[in-house]
Each structure stands twice: as C-alpha cells, then as structure tokens.
Amino acid sequence: MKNETQDKEGGVSRRDFLALSAFATAILAGLGIMAGVFRFFKSDAKYEESRSFKIGKPENFPVGTATKLADKKIFVFSDDNGIFAISCVCTHLGCLVYETETGFQCPCHGSKFNMAGKVVGGPAPRGLPWFEITQDIDGSLVVDTAREVPAGTKNRYS
Ligand code: FES
Image 1 (tube, protein in one colour):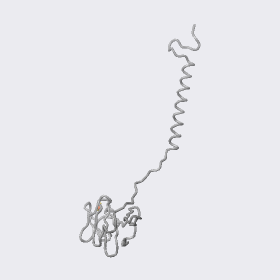
Image 2 (cartoon, helix red, strand yellow; image 1 turned 135 degrees about the vertical axis):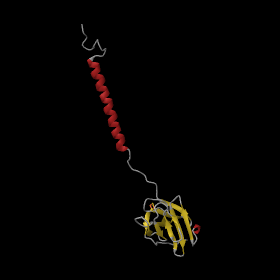
Image 3 (cartoon, rainbow, N blue to C red; image 1 turned 30 degrees about the horizontal axis):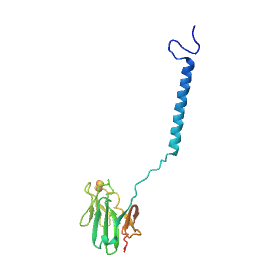
Image 4 (tube, rainbow, N blue to C red; image 1 turned 180 degrees about the vertical axis):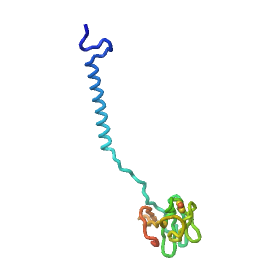
C-alpha cells in the first residue's frame, strides 16, 4: 500500500517537496528584499578628487619667474602685475604644452598659444584656461582648477 506522504520511487513526498520549494522561495525572496534595502541605504554619491591645491607661499614665485608644476598640469607665472596660473593642458586633445619664447606649443598636433594662452595656430578650439588663485590662512597660495578666471587676471599676494 502506498503511503500518502511519501513517494516510494523518489524517496521524497509531494508534501515535503512543496514545503522545500516554499522554503527556498521564501529564502530567495528574503535575499531579494535584503539586497533592495542595502541598495536603498547605500549612497550613490561619487566623490571627486578636489581640484583645489596649495602651491606654496608667494615668495616661492618671485617676479619674473615661470614655474611648471607638471604634476598639477599648470604653469605659475609671476610678473610686475602679480601671480597667475595657466593650464598646460592643450584644449585640442589634452596633451601637455610646453613653453616657447612666444608662448606655448603643443607637441601633439602643433597648436600654438601666445603668452596669454590665446590660440594663435593649430587645431586647438580655445585658449589655455587661467585658474583662480586664492591665499589660504597660512599664507599659501591655492589654485583651483575647477574655477577659471578671465585671461589676464593677476593678483599680488604678500
Ligand atoms: S592635443 Fe594639442 S594640438 Fe592636438
């Protein structure tokens, strides 16, 4: 005689199989809910590296000097009217420009810029940006490459 709760051929009764299926479904549903809750509380905020950095004290940039800060991809100049920072990233495809007697030149496709960073030749679509310089409370100059200023903006710092 066949037992109602047990299938002799497979060894697992229909009732047990349904109970196991329900249990597995409940576990999967629980994991899905937990994943949703985790995603809900997990922040999607992306933290961008600051584009503002200290470059040192004003006395490090005496009048008449041009300093290339290669790791920061800027030139820092100092003349009689003040200190200013110009990008050394070519506005064409991002190669690093170098100084020439008349301004800057890009080694990649030949763009040329005058001393103010204005395009005077080549494929660059716009001039080299000038960046805001501020002075920190400790006297250090701070360049913010996220904040452009009009070409020709120079300030004196003490
Ligand atoms: S990247 Fe400078 S000219 Fe093309």
